[in-house]
Length: 146
Image (cartoon, rainbow, N blue to C red; front, side, top):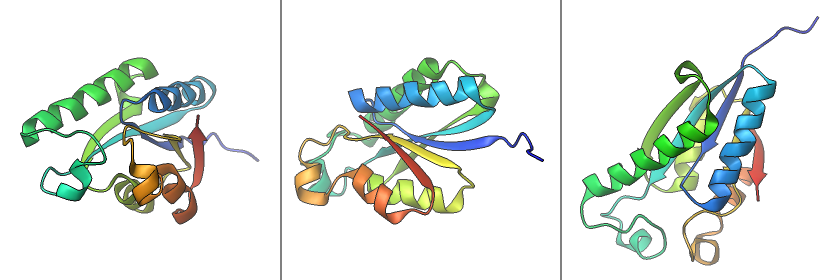
């Protein structure tokens, strides 16, 4: 007998075009299934000089970075058009792939959804892509949206 279990989705967003497409894909899941979505954006710490050269946000003040993260979450929440009880926005700081993997490990997620490429123009060359690292280092199912 099949039960109507709520599907828990980790949706990683950064405001890029691929991220917006990932939000639209998560919205489709929300229309088809009973879902709860943790909406995660990861901001790269200003103190880490190596990252400030290869991935946004590249800002002087940490509060500006948080404001951008809040704006990304607000726009993604609006795009999802789901009830507030079903969407849980979250801002974290660190290496995006590592933070997504850590969140996936501690959360009880059925699916991770993220864009194939984010805002970091050179991150694929220097670090390997976030989506690639998440795909190969998690036990959770992953949907990478192009």
